[in-house]
Length: 68
Image 1 (cartoon, rainbow, N blue to C red):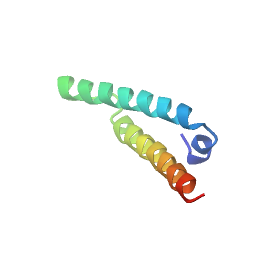
Image 2: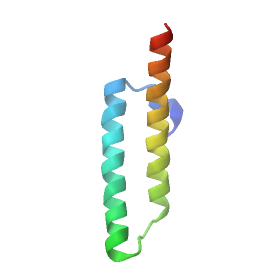
Image 3: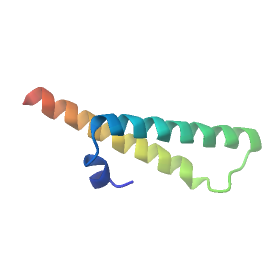
């Protein structure tokens, strides 16, 4: 997901999205630990990046609301 798409979402939607991403990441990591291999291992880093993007946008919004 692109940052521009995420910036258009509300805080509640972002928090819901981060929960979905964390659940999907945990599922992938669990599958990897059980089987030792994944069909698409690049998805782990993709989910981590998406989570970081969402957290960054939420933090930016906190900072701008504190300064305003």
